[in-house]
Length: 294
Image 1 (cartoon, rainbow, N blue to C red):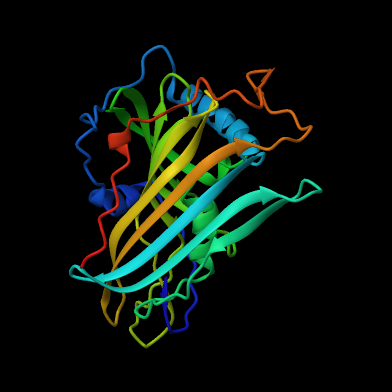
Image 2 (cartoon, rainbow, N blue to C red):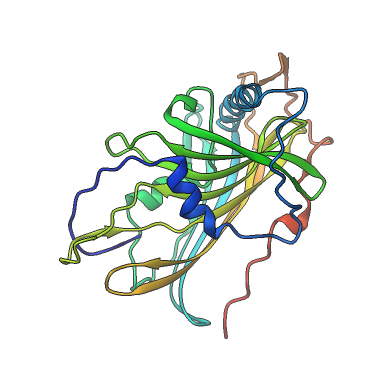
């Protein structure tokens, strides 16, 4: 999100800065168990990272062969009053040549006035909210093991991550991930897209700030943990004023695209119509959106 000024920004982010800053505001959900700062047993931290990164690469490749609907809602609020709103619903599909396309099915005119969505927001909607950390991307991040925690019936290893450096205009994720100790896949993320641009000199320059968000995943076709629900409820502290923002992003109707491409999981092809083993993280892990204020 931005307010209208102009500036340049370059920064290097560290896990230490992350731990003292962003994660200090980590929301505590009722279904979470206490975070236990105990080392893993029977497996090293490095082995966990290697295993989940390999699974994430499979997940990323597989998701590229699924269709789904993405529903984005962004609101600004003054107390309980909605002061502006942006909505977009689009289907991720394939054309007759098998090329991935987006078909917008609902996009009323935005009424946002306190902020405007920038290219960083668009990239986050597509790539940072459904964050993926594959073996190809591991070298770009500092990864710190912080302990173990239960998410309802799932037992998870917990890691804090931050980019080692910001390269060009590339967007990164900074925050915390929960890795299921059975499937070794990321089942939940909390953090934000970076970098931000802050007008530290208060000379009327451009600022780009982004809310902290939580994304929950659900298991699709009994194999892959795909993102299903993202929620952000945060206050962006611009120099001119604070803006309370609430985002809800839903990912629905995952369906395997019926092409000749084979999707493999642990060396075996995933059946196209295998929906019987589908399961999701418990419903209470996906908080309901607050009803619109009257």
